[in-house]
Length: 341
Image (tube, rainbow, N blue to C red; front, top):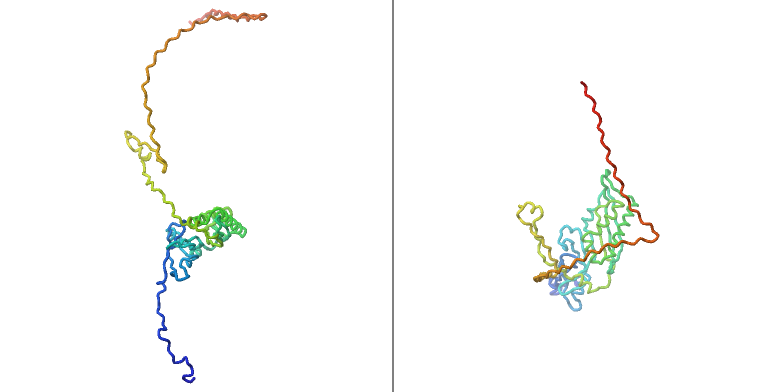
């Protein structure tokens, strides 16, 4: 092509066409993420958002954001590192984001470590509703275990037993969830109380091991209530510092002491919050007045006995005559036999 025909060729870019590279974090601000009071540590991290510019408000862009936190960081226990908790930001107060429970899951390495050879894997899932109107989908996982004194290597369950185990697991999850609120349910997930209940309930069908609530999903939630959110994030009531209990000498220590040493008296411990009872004052004893000697009463004279008159037409009762005593018989002496000469 001839030179000069194409207008775009041979032209260089305009001056100042290169944009200056600006760090994007210079126009962002940081907010603290506050977890519900079910967990031990309230502040679980920080999150950033673009500063408010025009109609774009920073707090509005934060609402609905999902945060994934490890349960070990929320509880301060390294043993719970196999659980992942997702929190949802519901409201922003000042420099803090107030969150609520959104979902729960096992880590991948924990989930894969549960599955083993020679065992039957049992999984169950159910949709349930809490008292405060949250719809959840709960998944459970379990593996069959060997019976006591079992000789065979495998412990497979029959298909009828697997179906019975699933029914039992579903009924156990439903009975726990429908009786409590969301926050109470989260505390049960942390303590693994539902999985322990499933293990004991299914033991009559087939012994189980590695029973866990594998996953929890939020399907539907009620209308946002700011009063309920404040209750969730209210600080826990601190326990009164009553002091440590001092150990007293037990019966073994007192038995080793010499007999002359007196045993200490055990005092009843006062109840916390109860007002001390006032000491009872002893009533002042007044000196007793000397009693006057009692005058002796004259003894009444004995009245003579009056004999009753006999009833007309009645025969008088005869007195029993005394029997005569038998005379003693005279003793007769027997003649002695003559001795041999």
